[in-house]
Image 1 (tube, one colour):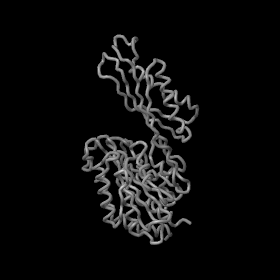
Image 2 (cartoon, rainbow, N blue to C red):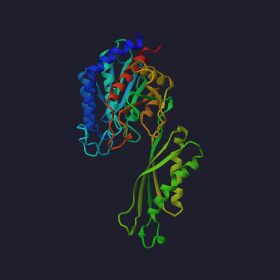
Image 3 (cartoon, rainbow, N blue to C red):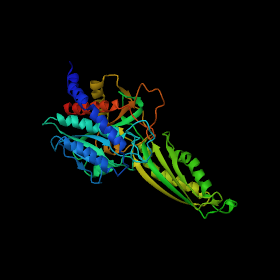
Image 4 (cartoon, helix red, strand yellow):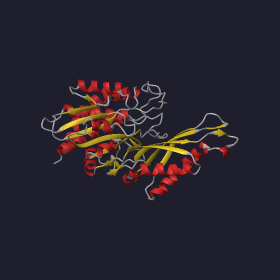
Length: 399
């Protein structure tokens, strides 16, 4: 038997004994989601399970989320991160008993799975952590869905102090359960938020020529801004400016004095991202100036691209092949989505892993992340635990 296979056996036995518990933990989290910054019950629930295992978690200074060290203090640490917040959308599943019990909030991005995987890997590793090994840090991070992300709160609270590498997983419904998506370099895109307020004197819809038509102007901003930004940047790197909210007026016969627009701004390029906070407001004001409207632009930098370290990706690939087999990793595409895991990787090397969650026997449509019906094949939990645990073990064994 190979060394890798012999190392995998204790993990396999542990998973056999704890798989039902981990599924139950995931379902509890799924049924009780909390939005960014309000994850108090989630924090308490995870803390209690860690304390049962004899560990001593501490709450992040921002008020929710946990940091928990395994093994000796001091020396280089390896960190595992799971995010704990839900999304402010309705859970539209009605065929499962673990659907959200909190109205208007759902774990539609898989954070319940991410946290369960990190918890499972941490509990397994704590069970057999070598006395002379560097420490392991478990990070249960709040507010990933809030710009610019709770990762900054964790970092400000010393969450990366002493850490030499960090790993995490993210559900990927495009991949079947059992598959792991890996990519060296950028794996996500930068994601910012912009809020635009257009103002004019208002007036009667019978005489739009006598005033500033803020609704027509809002339509012009929505239709023209994406192209103007791309032209201004002057690069082949694509940019997405997509509006998700528009509010203007209440009556059909009144031209409103204000229109409010909100959009996300995304690019896979770090260099382009660093210019957008100047370009987007300038081009918006230029459109508003054509009709003499007042324009206020509030641009919020979100997150840069998540950029995986080559060595860390190699360690995850080797670990996945050892515990799952050589055909279980695939090249991940760079996503247009953003993730605040990027802030960690600007401080220390690491790898963000795509975890396949689709049931290969389900031939229906693959629901995307952030969909109200989103769910996972729960066998992905065991896959994620195995890969993270084996990655940490491989990191410890590396010269």
